[in-house]
Image (cartoon, rainbow over all chains, first blue to last red; front, side):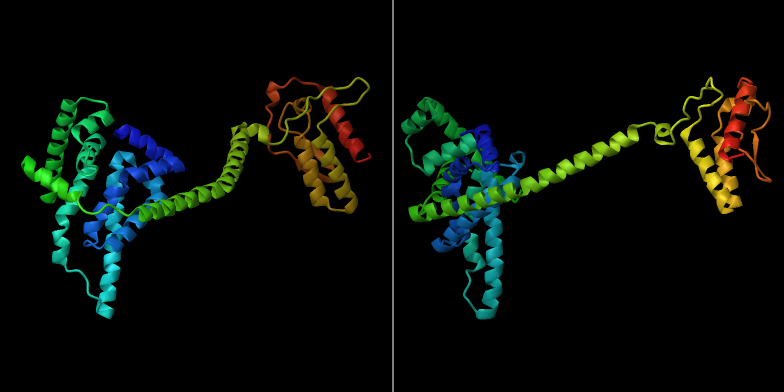
Amino acid sequence: MDAEAETVVVVAAQGGSDRAWRELFELHFDAVYRFCLPLAGGRCEQAEETTQQVFVTAAETIERFDPGRGTFRSWLLGIARNRYMTLRAREHRRSRLERVPWQSDAATERNRADLLVHEALARLPCGYRRALEDKYLRQLTMKEMAQTNGGSIEAIESLLRRARDRFARIYERMQNGE
Amino acid sequence: MNNEDTDSLLARGFAGTPPRAAFRAAALQASQAALARVRSRRTRWRIPALSAAAVLIAAASFLCGRYSMPRSSAGPAPLEPRAVADAGTVAVPNDLVVWLDAARLFRQLGMEERMARAVDRAGRLLPVDAVAAFGGPAPAFTADSEVVRDETNRVSPRSMPIQHQSFENVNRILAQSFGD
């Protein structure tokens, strides 16, 4: 799905279409969950809770999403980060009162690279992101990708190369705090 | 960053166990319920919002229509065309008759000051050709022993044709009105 097609689906979901919403959910659910996992320090339950809250919040506030300001994936990850910060602040307050052990900042730092991967992916154009996800998440072969996208294997290889280059540039920029 | 680094970063980013199917279904259901809530809330607000918009549009249309009319037309109605009738009668504005009636009533009640004012107002409504008959400032009307003068002098006497007959007609109106 390219950027324009995704925008059409987002606009339909903003209009209240269940079908469009389901499509967006299927498209981004895995990535959001995998973003929430390092965010929650590898704790599956917390990652699941955050992921669910992200999609509920997104459904409630989808009217506020502006496709001109970024990708839908970036918006979802932004919600996840906000939810996580809220959760973390709450647990931090509770840990001071009840002496609940909280994951150290060093542990969170270990997950920073994983989070950056997802945030950089979210900033990629839809076509590049889909190609990378097909290869690394769904682990499709070049032949399968060519069949899915309706192109030649050489075209897919070229697409993957360009997608990786773009991803690397975005990742490095983000790593440098830009 | 070389290709291998990028490759390993991406592979690590997508590594790990995928989300459970049951959790996926629950999350989808919860988010769809949230979307349905938003949809119903929007529908609930739509009717009052449309009603309010309709009222606003109606009010705006009314005000625009009202203020688009020339100011003069919103004021008192222009004097009706006057024509001297054949049988010794004269057509006058309705307001003149009303003021004369009022003056007569005030006279009966002994309210001289008010009566003078009513006569004054009636004098302003006199047909202009009657005013011109004087060839000078606006006419004065006598009510009992009190003289009330029209100071407004709204009509230029020189611009009006002289018609003595009209003035006589007006005097007759006043006299008839007071029952003299």
